Structures are given as structure tokens and as C-alpha cells.
Image (cartoon, rainbow, N blue to C red; front, top):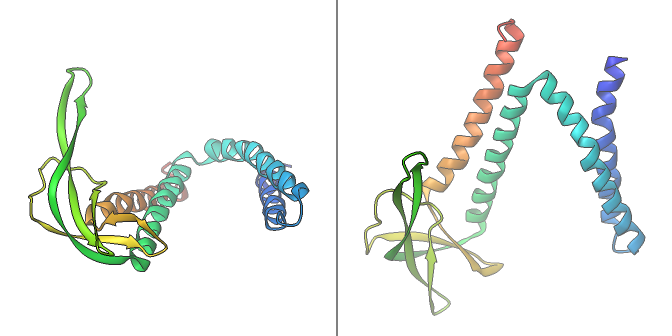
Length: 191
């Protein structure tokens, strides 16, 4: 009975997702399919809570590893896919953006972090972009940086930065290490 219940907890959200996907693919034919897709996705979302609850009861560390690995993997994949199709141009750091982050809430201390503002030229037009990765050191004015521009949307530009890959890669590897180590501990009986 336990096995049937466990399989059912995972099969029900999967069935709703499949039905929702089919309705979504057919949604260009009728509004009824759109409503069906929305209903199926809502049911899958609600029923997936029971599956997640069951997973958290049985294997919380493995679940955390899968989630961290999935988030990191998706982030790495999206960045790589963007820069694979992007048009790469060189830009020059003209200034920096700054913000304060609290380092210790108890003492109300803060640290200023900086991101480069890069000027680049594309299609005969000068543009500016602010980096998404902040660091404790001020970027040096005049430093040449690479900028990736999406050819399908020329207003979507990103600085090529190894730091952007670093955070995503760290999440990916942290998830893999957590998943493997907790699974190994469970299999050897030390968990």
C-alpha cells in the first residue's frame, strides 16, 4: 500500500502536467483548451505539494541538493546559451555603480560594493550597460570589457563576466556535492 501511495503522489502531478501541456499546445484552436491548460497546471501545482512533502519527509538533504543543482544548472545553461548566440563587442569602463549592503545587522554596519558601467557602440549608436556582478573593488576606468548583445533583441545586452558563471557554477557544484554526499551517507547507513 505504501508503494502505491508513493507512486500515486508523483504520478498525479505528472499526469496533470502532461494534460496541461497537451491543452497548451492545442490552445491555438480554442479558448476551451486554454482554460483546460490553466486548470491542469493549477491542479499539478496543488498536488505537487503532497509530493514535495513526501520527499522532504524521506530525503530532505537529497531534495535540497537536487534543487540547488537544478537552479545552478539552469543558470549556467542560460548564460552559455545567451553568449553562444550573442554578438560580442568590446566596451570600455567609463564609471561605476555602487550600492551599500549590510554586513552585520546587529551592528548596522554596511559595505559599499561596485559594478562597472561600460560604454559600447553597436549599430552606430553609443550605449551604456551596468554589470550585474558587484564586488568590493572599484572597477578601473578605461578597462576593456566584452559585451554580448542578443541579435534577436538588440536591447538585451550583458557583460561577459567570469563572476556571473562563478555563482551559477557554485550553486550547481554545491547541489551535486550535497546530493552525492547525502546519498552516499544514506546508502552506507551513516545518515
